[in-house]
Length: 260
Length: 253
Image (cartoon, rainbow over all chains, first blue to last red; front, side, top):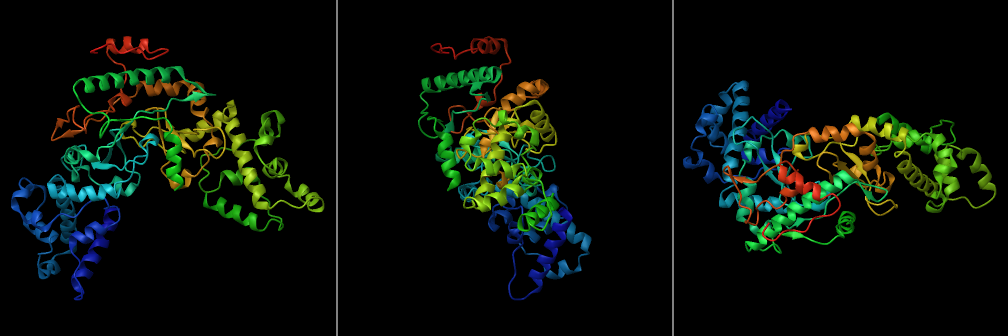
């Protein structure tokens, strides 16, 4: 899949630079590609500031050239002289480097703002868990070094990790978002922390709950009550953001939302 | 599978031309109907299994004939006598009838067997939760009466309910699987519960630069209980107390 994309992008990039009418930026091409919906665009200033790139030099070959390629400052003559294999290498290096810079950029003030917009549009998808009521998700990596695992999605509502629904998002490296992003995001925008639903499901047979599962659910509810108790004695407000949602008619309202 | 759909629509448009398709297999093969299993006709023909459905489904007789492929004869009679009921209405009633019989059938031994086969082939999808490691899910209704809720998926590993991933399954009626199915399935195939008990119970903790977010912060862990299991002796004791009710909290606990 990666190969097909790569040749596609080359055609795109070459066309872009060949036609004199308008030039498409590499970043715009990158963001417009299918499956790259999770990425936000990084400011040019951020990429060209050497301070932000500390320790990334060794992640790719010919670092300076790759940076120039990303910000479209590489001479056309240089590009034209390059053999196809080198051009492909350059393209994949550029993608990797962009991803790594992206992980750093999205935890800056500006980056968080851009991601907030994407979160509001639910660009990262919504939580598949029924009781989370279509809560928008946040991308997160499990490792900060590339090439280990793909991106996961964090639900601020049930505080759990989900696998992206579509396979084209499943191939994005988790390191391009970093392990700290959802934590930083929710610290920066505490008003974006949803209330947590208390309601849960216990399998039933003809209306009677399965004993084993019900017992576990009761024990888990006890743990929750203990936590709630502890937090209220410490003076934490559990009525607002990050508190618990009450009410039992969630199922009905959920379907109302779905039919809309 | 695409072929089946093609066949199906063809037979629908040219009923009289002689190509003959059985209703049940073609219904189950329809796009988006992957969650249905085939109910054998002798199950439907047994009146005992159909108790109470005549009141729930409109045009019960005609719908039943359509499901059992007896339509050819009755249609001629009907054309002479009463005014004919529109075909699409009967078709809709037949789907409803089949769905409700399906909910009953999958609780029987052969039904559970048929569903287990689909379960093994991951036809109901796998759990989207990362730490469930691709556990297969079971279809489940939230209500047993038609028209209330769409189908949900139950993950035996995290005991939670999810929405189907694909939009074509989002509009399926939940009552066609019923509220009891996952429970009966779990009780029938004990080895599934044992397998789930042996699974690793990993959970996620929000971290910033490697440091855990404090519980008192708004984004602190508030849902840890949902994926928590009794491990320590203290937990086990507490868990035993929860056999029939939640014990009252001790002050300062």
